[in-house]
Each structure stands twice: as structure tokens, then as C-alpha cells.
Image (cartoon, rainbow, N blue to C red; front, side, top):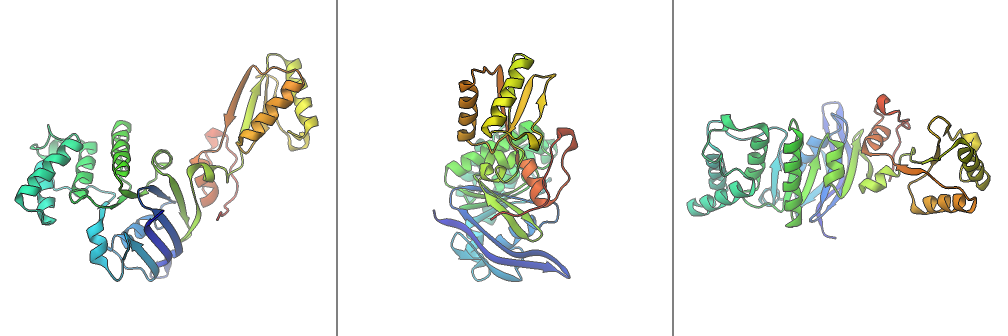
Length: 331
């Protein structure tokens, strides 16, 4: 697929602090890529370089075919940027904010009014169009902020923490807006602290840590990097539980030396798995040949929180009882 964003060896330092240390990243046109990382990892710096707000110290980056260093005007003509904080003018109404942005984009009076009306409708702000920004909720302000970014229909959109501080309903509204934009062909690079947001929106996720991309892949690919997936089987009585544990151990599906737990109180058996269908099929076939019936079955796979903690060396969530691997990298 055509690359809308292509980064090679991107470097940036502030004084003695290296923020980006040779970052490589490609974002295909018409897709959503999420950039994840701990605070200070360089996510916003990356976005600022790509949007021509900050110059890189080294490496190359192109956006919509334009080099960010050699053709910044070409980049600016192709992109939209919504930052972490709303850039709306609180002294104006929603409609006036949109008209101001349209005029700054040199759309002319007639086109400015038409585009403002279209965006107010698209972002469900018609009823509040002529009300002062002081009456807007946080979610309404963020929708207006994004609407202003879209005045000139950018081909590439940078969203830097777009739903920070929003309530769940407003977040879901923003998610649908992003999905609609991508369905129309817009390319989105998203930075977020909400891992469920990345899982919901992004076709690919890049994890930035220590100045480098330490993992890059689809959400499912990243989840498979982290051990801890398992199948939990529940049986009707303790006799069936013991028989199943014996049958699976003798087949090599489980290894008693690994301490695969059998919970006699819950009548359940936990079997490690990489989440593959073939593993589940082989497990069920083995139990079927042994004449054993399962009362209940559930599959548990690592989520993006587990991936994030594993790859960035974070602290695991003790309340989930998750054992998190030490920091690693993936190609």
C-alpha cells in the first residue's frame, strides 16, 4: 500500500536528553496507526516534527510524499493537527471559530460559510453553533477543535491525545468520527494514553520507548508477543477434573513441572496457550478421545495493557494478577 507517512532514522535531542534515537515508522494511506509509549517517550515530539512545528536533528520524514524539511509548505497543505489541548477561541461562538479557520485557509466568504455549516452538521453542533464557547462541554469543545482541523479536508490527520479528559460517551463519539474519516480515505496517526482507544481504532500500533520503536504490528500481533494466554476449562466434578489433568499431561498439552494449576474448588484447569486455533482444537480433541466432557470453557489472551507494560518496563497491574515479563523488544 502507498505510504502516507514514512520515517527513517529520525533523531531529536533537547540538550543532553535524547528523545528520538533513530525512529523508523511507515503509515499506510487510509489507515489508523497508534503511537503508544510512556510519558516523555517522544510521541508528541514525533508528531510535531511530522507537522513541521519542530525540526529533527537527523533522519528523514515524508508526509503525503512531501519531505518535512525540504517541503514544509507541501506538508502543511496536506495535514491537519489536533493537539492535546483545544485550540478554540473561547470568546467566539462555535460557528465563528469555524468561519475564522476557513478564512485563514483562504476559502473565501461563500465557501467558508458552506464548509462551516457542513462541519457543524457532521459534528452534531448545529444547535450550539451560535452559542458562546463557555456553554460548551469538554466533549463539544473537542469535537469543535477537530472540526476546525478538518476545514480544508486534510489527507493526513495527526491526533495527539484527542480524547484526553473526556467522559466515556464523548470518547465513543470521537471514535466514530475518526472511523468515518478513515472510511473516507483520511490517514490518521494517533497518540493516546488510552490503550483501549488504540485497540478500538488502530489497524497498526507502534510502541515508542527509549527513543526507538520497540514493537510495530497489528493489535493481535502485539498481544501474541506477551506470554500469559491460557484456556480455562471447568468440569462437573473433581473426578473429571483429575482425569482431564492426567489426559492433558500425558499428551504433552500440559507439563506438570510447569505448575499448570488445577483449581479443585472451582473445578477448573488452566492450560497455557498462544491463542492459536490449532492449540484449542488439539486440546478439545484430546479430551474428546478421553471421553471427558467440559462444563465450561473460556479463552484468556493478553491485552494491550500487558503488551505496554512488557515492552516499556512498566509496573504490572497487581489487581489483575497479571505476571508481566521484563522489558524486551520485537521487530
